[in-house]
Image (cartoon, rainbow, N blue to C red; front, side, top):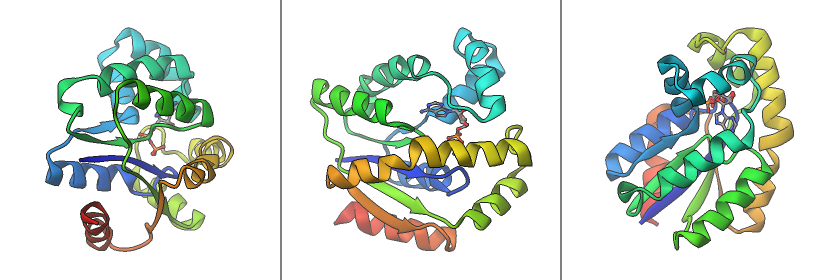
Length: 184
Ligand code: ADP
C-alpha cells in the first residue's frame, strides 16, 4: 500500500514524478494545483474563489482545500493508495491531514522531499511558462514556499516519515530512486 506525500518547492519536479509513479502503481495522483487550475478553467465556484490567489502566487485559503481533500481521500479509488502532490502546504493543512488520516483509518507510508537548489528552480519555472510562471509571481511563490511549506520538512522528520531525494538529476534517475523507495 503506497500512500505518499510529495514535498518540494515550485519547480522541484514533484508533479512530474508523482504522475509517473502513480501511473506505474495504478493509484490516484492527487494534485491540488491541478484541481485548482481545472476549477479555474471551468469557472466553478471553487475556481472563481481561488483564481486571484493562484494568479498572485499566494496559497488559497485553507477552507477551500480542506473539504476537497477530505472528500477525495474518502473516495473508493483512494483506499488502495495515493500520491498527494501540493498538499499539505502549511502546518495547519498538515495537522488537518494527520487527523483526517486517523479518522479514515489510513496510514501515510512516507513523505518524499524533493531537494533542488534555488537557481535551478528559477530556471525550470521560467522555462515552463505556465500562466503563474512569470518572474515576479515565481519569486513570490518561492517566498511563500520558504515561509509556509518548508517547515513541513521538520514536521515530517519529527513524524519519522521524511525521505530526501535529490531532485537535481535526470528525470529517469529520480523515477528509479522513487521505485526503489516504494519497494523497500
Ligand atoms: P507549484 O508546484 O509550481 O507551486 P502547484 O500546481 O502545486 O504548483 O500549485 C499552483 C498554485 O495552486 C499555488 O501557487 C497555490 O496558489 C495553489 N495551491 C495548490 N495547492 C495548494 C494548497 N494545498 N493550499 C493552498 N493553495 C494551493
